[in-house]
Image (cartoon, rainbow, N blue to C red; front, side):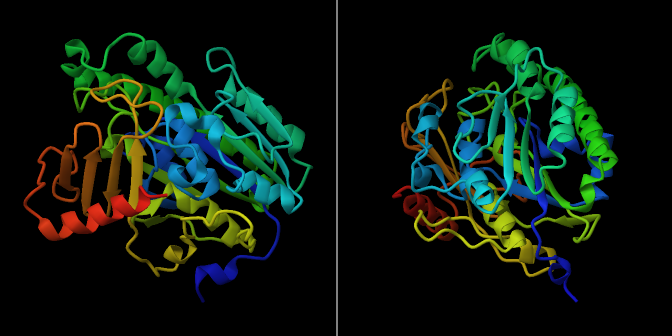
Amino acid sequence: MGFLKLLKKKKKNIIIIMIDGARPDFIDKVQYYNDLKKESIFFSQMISYAPYTIASLHATFSGMYGNSNGVNGYYQSFNFNEKSKALQEYLKGEGYYTECDLIREDVLTKRGFDKWRVHDEFKDNLIERHSEILNRVQNKKPFFLFFDYSKIHTNLVHNVIKKYSDFDKEYFDNKEKNAENYLKWVGESGNYLEAMMHHIKKLGLQEDSTILVFNDHGTSVGEKIGEKNYGSFLYDYTIKCFLYLIDKDLPKNKEVKEVIRSIDILPTILDMLKIKEAKNFKKMQGKSFLSFIDGKTEKRIAYSEAGGLGGPTPSPNKHNVKSARTDEWKLIYNETNKKKELYNIKKDPQEEKNLFGTEAKIEKYLWDIIETENRE
């Protein structure tokens, strides 16, 4: 019997925890993140639509890219269009109580939330705050909670964003020290996550809840001059993400290595809950990846966009850098300077050797993807 047949048709609570700015290659160095893999299905190659929170989250919650949902630039957060239906709207329509706690009010649309909260990233204790929310809503079943862990971002603001420029030699010449600092902040996120998972179990919520833990994007520790943190480029250190899926009816200690996309999260949750996609809204571009759990995988192409506030070609009003990525290849195109880059991700995971002009067949294939997605 396949694992998916074990999923019961019931309205389980949905708890989503986002670790803002964490990188897959750094969580592997934190003990609790490795421990959590033993309790979950771990997707080790999820690709984000955008390397910054606003566009990434709107894509995740709508199941579609920014060119379809309207959020395709740093300054487009309030352009989330009426024909894009968000996860919380689906769940509220099914009788769920919905609540979120975010770092800023422009991070995610308010539509569909019964309670929409913003915390002070510099002052609030997120373990205490999010535990209190769990205590308060535990009897409002079924419920949907979205928690934004923002402290990695807070440390980046203090120690990188306000301190250096995108071309600061002092920063880019000290990658080892940058990585050491960043690992400490990721380690702190592991402490938060361990406390939250312990509290969820203490309340007995793991019995009738589906829990997702993921990151929206990563960040630079000085790999590429021109990007001190994230948002300007589309290299894997910012768009390669991770996802833990925890449900007592699904297997534990299983890793899925195939490419999935952040836009696939919404259709997967709907698939788990047997909720049909709304017909009077824009069609989602994401697809459920539940079948991957039973080994029925397929090759998916991840499309991503960026438009930096800084960097060499800033474009905050509309994304100007586009990429298409498979599990082996990535093509990046910058509309401002017309530069194209092609990388073999498997052989060159650090994306140091630009192969553009040497692989005509894969270049055309990925270029067609970029042109198609860019037309929306």
